[in-house]
View 1 (cartoon, rainbow, N blue to C red):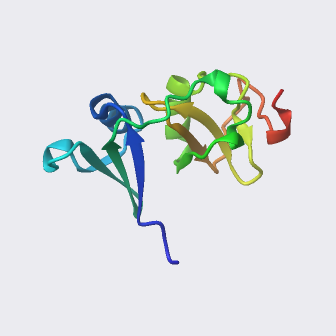
View 2: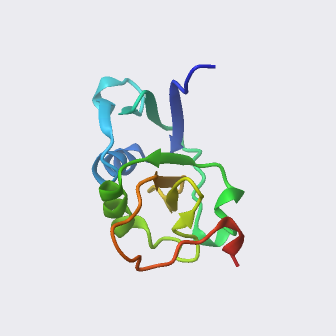
Length: 142
């Protein structure tokens, strides 16, 4: 294998998810929903395509179902420190006992999209100054 070509994310309601990935995460739109006969949208993330597909079978997860972030499959997006901090400022409080995490080579935090899909944003850039919250390790989860 040479690379991950695309990832398909199952959603129940395409419109709020499309807006979330486009506006909140700032992903580059490759093909908007208007390009498709069915309910799909495509984003370009580096060399990988992320496709949203409205199927009506999304997970609908919540914090009570998340004992540990590694208990559920997720998609992790890598970005620079500035964008990481911006997104964490908006979404980093969904799971206050779940991060941000120190994964040795990078720092990351988890959050849900509007349909309950578990996502992570990571950065390998160190912060400039003190942290408001200490970093956790995967063994710190209560």
